[in-house]
Image 1 (cartoon, rainbow, N blue to C red):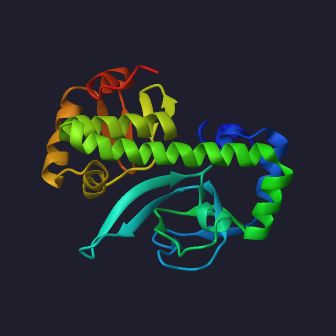
Image 2: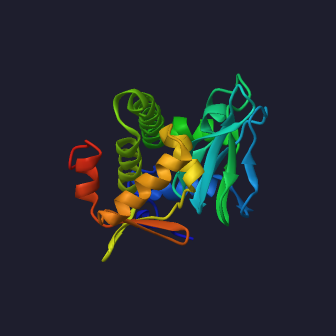
Length: 232
């Protein structure tokens, strides 16, 4: 089956690869489906395969020192998860990845991935760039905690999710991965009551609309101004 890059976000791995390389990467893996709540990868596990996500979205979580679980990131169709263990292989997995709905994936064994990275430098360069983007994203979250109030941190998170994972419609930019208020609180380092208030204010200001399993950014430019982010 041939796939088009339009099926995935432009900044995802599958979104940036050329058609023949993208098809080769997909065909290198073994098909596996997950349902909502299924664990794709487990924190502390020593398995080494990576997963190429074709559809759906998942949440990446890890346990913190007090025993609670913290949401670290979201991953959507077009992304990879578990690639660090597949490439490095020297430490247990650092996070758990959980399906948030039906998902289709390709399982990439370490040897298969290594061979493909050597044979197809385009995949190696793209994957390295994506890993670097993820590190920068994590660093920005840490800096945001110190430099911005909670409402601005929330606006920055939503604007970045819309830019990375959103798709345009007549009504705005739809973020297909709907996050709960506790999850938004975890990603922004804010109290859940603060997130509730912030979302209400953003809705009243006409910047976003929340619906079942989705969030629509009605005014992305306005949200970026509030978030102290550049227009592009």
